[in-house]
Every structure is written in structure tokens, then in C-alpha cells.
Figure 1: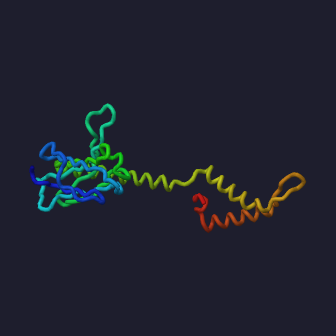
Figure 2: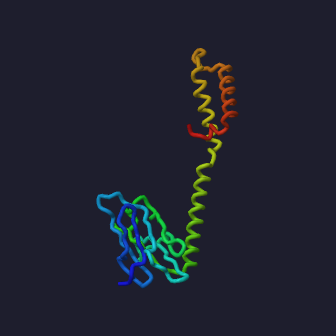
Figure 3: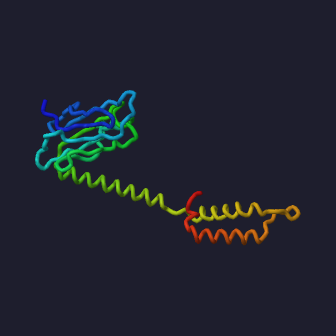
Length: 203
């Protein structure tokens, strides 16, 4: 067997240096069983072993291997990133909160393939850009102001809560003094001036 090239450290587990399978001289599969009575892991460190130098112009592409969906023979390979000259180690998230459901049965399968460095670098740029875009969209969604209807409902709720304590009856009709409404408007306007965004918060 050739000298191991890579080391893997699943979070909370010992280092792994021996691949489970070597389909080709440049591809390696590591089957990592789910830990027993130990908190499942969601991150893994991959690094070049000391003294290992990849061929010039190459880098190691890291893949998460998941079972094929119904009707598909080949497993899925999800590109996670890469390591190589200038970046000899990296931490990768496996895409879920734990090992469960990420691998084959109770197993996480990681694939490492030595590929042209330019190709690996381009794919890293792609997934980084996609991640940045997703985060930006999430921030925009989180900061989206409430709709006009929601704002109207909050104004009415604010007024109702204030005026309810002033309500009385005239015969069988429930009434609120006009002065109470004027007082509510004065306080409401003052709060809008001092805290313009208070209606956008769902207090």
C-alpha cells in the first residue's frame, strides 16, 4: 500500500490516515462510522500529512459522499472544498447538525480526489460566492420591514390598549372621551419621534 497522503479528524474523534478504499491512485474514500454513545459530529478537519507534497499544479478536492436517490445508481458527491499548497488543512461542515442522514446508513463517507489546482480553486470560489449570496438574501429577508397591514394592526392595537382604560358607557353604548384619544395621539406621536422603529419590532 502507498504512503498515506491525508489525515482526517472528525470532531471529537481520533485522527484517521488510512483510506477505506482507493479506487484509483488519485482518489480515496474514507468510511467513518457513527460514534457510539458519543455526540455525533458535523465538522471534520482534513489536512496533508507532514512531509506530503502533492504533484505540482494539483490540489485535493474534498467530497461528501451520500447515497444515491431512488432510480440513480451512482452515489452523490457534494463538493465541500479543497486543501493543497498554501492551504494544507481546512475544516469542513458536512451540511447537517450531525452524522445522522449525512452518510450511508450510520456511516459518513468522505471522498478525496487529487485534481488540477485551477479546477479545485474555481469550484471553491463558486461555493463561497453561493454561500455569500445566500447569507445576503437571508439578511435582506430578516431586515424586510413589516407590511402596511401589519403596521396598521400594531397602531390600532396600541391605541386600543391605551384607550381601553378610559372607556365608559352612555346608556347602553360604550364610549371613549375625545380627550383620551387626544392624549393617546400625543403620546404615540412623541414615541414615534423618539423611537421611529418601534412599530417595526414585534414587541
